[in-house]
Each structure stands twice: as structure tokens, then as C-alpha cells.
Image (cartoon, rainbow, N blue to C red):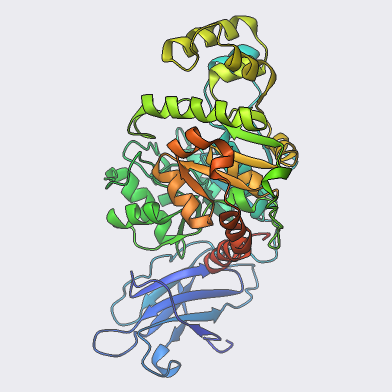
Length: 486
């Protein structure tokens, strides 16, 4: 065997005395903590359940470090890659988290499983909403933001084949095929950290499928900064994910604190894949003089309950005021991201439009069926889409993106367009803080429109910090051993 340890660096996690951070067919990286008595534990490396080598960190680590990462080369086996690698405390028999997983092949067409996809995939890494009859498209609500995050994540990852992992009604044959034919699992970034999250049989599947699991940009959801108590099933799910990777990638500090509050310690703030979807580290984000701005996209989020905002009625009033203010200051286009009534106008269905207007009047969104300004906007200035690629094209045509949709602003920034977010919940606030996106209170946009919140200094700070944010995401993927294309 080659030298057992070829690299030593400081490790970022103190959760376990030892933990496999990542494993490929070429090497395994283990974090090790010095024991309280001052000595390092001897480690036994197992390949396919058989002892392969004993590693004594004390013979390799000098100085007073309390924590280290060991990079151990793996042999080339005559019958291919090992089905599992494990690290065990040679003295106590304790097994390191991350053990007995299938190592990721470095020279192979990789097969990936996704937990909770959002849309159908075409041309390898492009996502559109599922094909359906017109009446179903009009009647169903779906979050186009989820579709954008899914599309963006696929653009970052390296894989040759992708499948959704069945979590509602998986068969034994499904689970056996996942375990034998696939290389890794990833959890699509979304609002998955909350009290009512339903994982169905995902825990059972993951416990049987010994593959690395990566979470990239997942987040907690609440209308205000408060403690979230996860269900036992959710805690078990995130515990499995945490044990199968170096760290869970969350979008901001609120999400990180929520997982830690629920006992999941190895988390890292990385932001959202949607702002990195073009994979351009040196992206030039334009910050034009206000006088040069003509076309402004206002991203709408009309539907919101108390999980998103503490006062839905005030939220709706502020949003309408902001919409009309921005409309009066520019060539405004209102972008809709899944609301049913807006789809009725976008798809130009007369009967559905009539029902939509009734709903608008009932909720006070329109002042009446003869609300001329709102009807003009809905008839002539509404943009929606069912294919993420269409939003990229739209974003490249605008000068500024403002509004209530995180995934109306972030993917526009990914095209080099400046953006300003309205802060109305923990999600928008933490993502803005993580990615240096200018964020303003609801009243500020309602009172001043885009001109009142357009601050060149803040947008210049976003432009300057983009490469650093990009590096943070790419480094996170590297540390986790995630096959990627950044």
C-alpha cells in the first residue's frame, strides 16, 4: 500500500471523534479528533468488510492540533471498485459515520438519484414543468421557483444518468436497483426544513441504499425568525444526510441554526444554486446609472399564508402599491411564478380569467372588475413560463429585477442583471444576507418604487462579492466530494 496519509489539514467539524468526509475510488478523507487523554485513536480501514490497513495518526501528526483530516489512498482492486469503505476505531470498534457507503467513482459515467424533483428533465440538465392538459395546468398550483432551483442544481452537478428516487411507494426491486446501480443521491434545494415536511418512506430507502447523500442549498421556512421544532422523522432524515456527507449545504444562517437546534451539527452556509446557474465565476453584474434603466421585472408572489408573512392583508396591500409604483416608473413586466389566476391570463383562457378576476376583487387585489391599471398589467405586461430556459431569455432582456420572488431575482443576477429583493420572510432575508443581494422592507418598495430602493453602492458590493460567493459554493462541493462542473 502507498503511504496511508498524503495530506493533513484542519477539519471544520467537531461533531464526531472520527468521520468519513468523502470517499472516491481513489482516496478516502477522514476527520479525526484527538482523545481527551491527548492521544490520537488508531484507525482500521475496511474495504468490503475486510480489514485493509491500520493507520496511526500519532505517527503522522505533529504539533498541538486537536483535529485533523487524513487523506488515505485506496488500492486498485482487480475486480473493480470496493462496494463499501469503512473506518473503525481500532481500540473500541466504534464505526465512523459515513462508513459502509459505496465510494464515488472518479472515472465513470455517474448515475444520480434526486429526492423531490420539480419538473421533467430534457437535454440532460434543462427542466420544464410536467406536460399536462390545459385544464390541469390552469387548476394546479406549482412553484416555478422549485423548478428553477432544480434546473440550477443540475447545471452544477456531474452525472450521466438521473432518476427521481421513489419515496412514496418504492418496491424492494427499486431499492435493490438504487443500491447496486447508482453512485450518489442529492436532495433538491428547497424549503424542506419545517414542522410539516413529509418524507414518506425516504428514511427507509436511504437506510437501505448505502450511497453518499448531498444537500445543496436547502432551507428552513418561517414568516419570522423563531425556533422550528422538527418531527422525529425529519430529524432522522437530516441525521442520515449529515452522516453521509461532510456537511449539509444550507442557504443561510437561519437554516443553519434551525438544523443545529434540532441536533444536526455539520451544516455549512452556501446560498442557492440558482445564482450560479451559468457557472461563470467572473460574471460581470451590470450596475447601470438609473437614467439608463428602462425595462424592470417585478416578480409577483400574490399568494402567501402565515408561514410566509405575519400579516397577509398588509403584505397584499404593500405588494399592489409596489407593483403600481414600479409600473409608473418604467417599462414594467410582471413575472408570475406559479399562481393559478395569473396562469389564466398568461394562457388566455376566457373562463378561467373571469374566475380569476372574481378572486382578485374578493381579496382586494383589484379594486373592482373595472380596475383599469391592473387589467392593463395583466392583459399586456404579464410574463410567465413553464420552461426555465425561457426565464433565462427573459432575464437577459431586462435592466433590473425587483420583487417578492427569490427565484425571480437570483436567476436574473446569474445573467448579470442587478436585483433587489423584498424581505418578507426568513427565506428571502437569509438568502439576501448570504449572497449580498440588496434587500428592502415591503414598505420601501411600496412607497418609493424601484427608484427609491436602487442603491448603486449596494449593487456594486454584490458585483464585487459574486466571485467569493461562487468560490464558497464550489469549495463546499469539493469538500463534500460532490461530482460537479463549477
